[in-house]
Image (tube, rainbow, N blue to C red; front, side, top):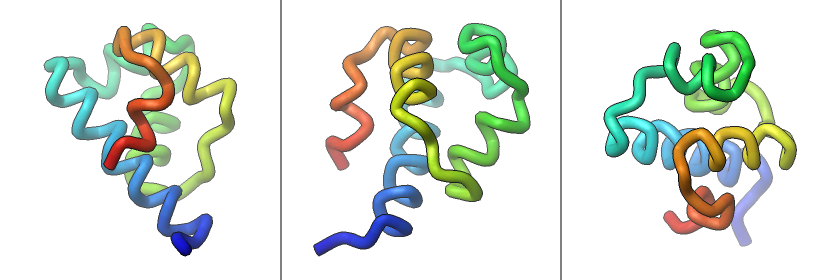
Length: 72
């Protein structure tokens, strides 16, 4: 079983990977999601647990399905 902390880390890393693959900066993603750039960085570094609402915002901004965040 994977712990909640491990999922948080993996999802953050995967968000960064997907963002970079789309050639989107943290600032641009933050602007698209209407949130501060620091929040994107904290999610990617697993300093915070991301909410479902925020995952959906990020997925829409990256033009992907939210389930892709869990496809490690």
